[in-house]
Image 1 (tube, rainbow, N blue to C red):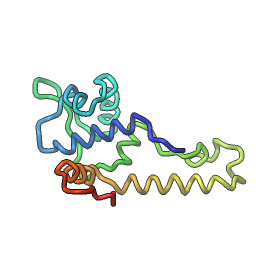
Image 2: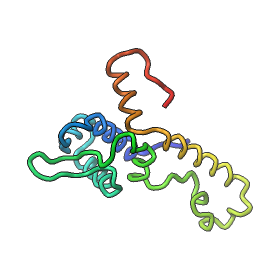
Image 3: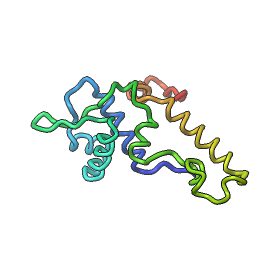
Image 4: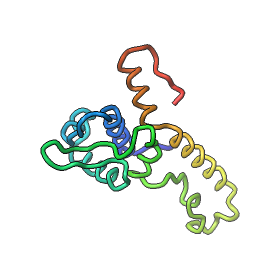
Length: 149
């Protein structure tokens, strides 16, 4: 039905790693690429979009790399996906009704808008710090993860 693209999934994984290293030196592209099993070339494009969106800072030089531009609790999954995927649109008419000549009398448009609003609400409700906390629970083997996020 609806599927998140590879861009969104990979960008979110990379951002969770940066958030988990928040107080550490910048992460180099090669490190992120290897740890997340994402090609460096592909990850480079994603990081560029995240830098442009103001979510990541890029540092040059010997000790350079990538760090979060904001605290992990200030970055939402929605922000990441919007940076690499663009706005969430379940149908072309939800964001811009003028794209469809039938939008004014379309009974299903309200359904697509509700789906979009719900998706946005869920993604805006999850921060990187929430995901790092969940990751630490899973990594520590402290039983099942908290599925409330």
